[in-house]
Length: 71
Image 1 (cartoon, rainbow, N blue to C red):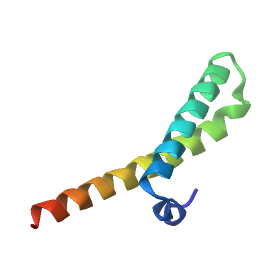
Image 2: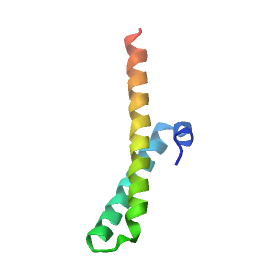
Image 3: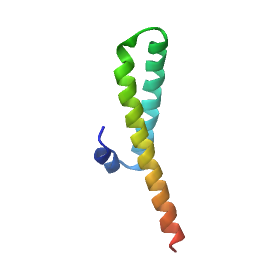
């Protein structure tokens, strides 16, 4: 998923996305450990997408902190 689309989501939706991605990654990791390598590409893409979500959440957290310090 593109970062621009993720930035349009609100905080609650980002939390839901992150949780769903974490669950999918868990299932894919189990499949990989059982020898099914067809989920490897999906796992890599999910890992990068989740990193984007976490990065955007952190950006918002820092921006909110910076706005409070300015007062």
